[in-house]
Image (cartoon, rainbow, N blue to C red):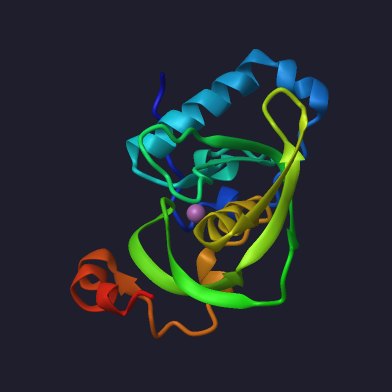
Length: 175
Ligand code: NI
């Protein structure tokens, strides 16, 4: 197990479009090791998702906790070459943070329901219908693969807050 260094906002890797992964690349030991290390890194920093560019790898892959009601038995989902299709036109502003933008939270509008398609780590097609927070996480992580950070999606910076102030002033407003 290795904990990887997480790139922080300002590092150019976070702004580049990541490259697609070929199905045969998934037989590559180094890539499978990267996936395991990304899962360990996500858990180590108590994240709910981590995209490869955040650990300085420009490939289209993310790991995330996508259970609607996560518990101790929840396992990380691995999505290769993920694509998002909105299943509704409805968007909802909800709180997001990012391991690459430590200790900051902001309200970000996202589609409330999506279809997430991609491959799993063995190269099998996956299709997930997601709503609510897992749908939000999947949109946030897929954005990372296109060099997009959650700040870019905010319609106003009024809600931008440090974590301490978030706990103090904002959590009661959460719906
Ligand atoms: Ni992020």
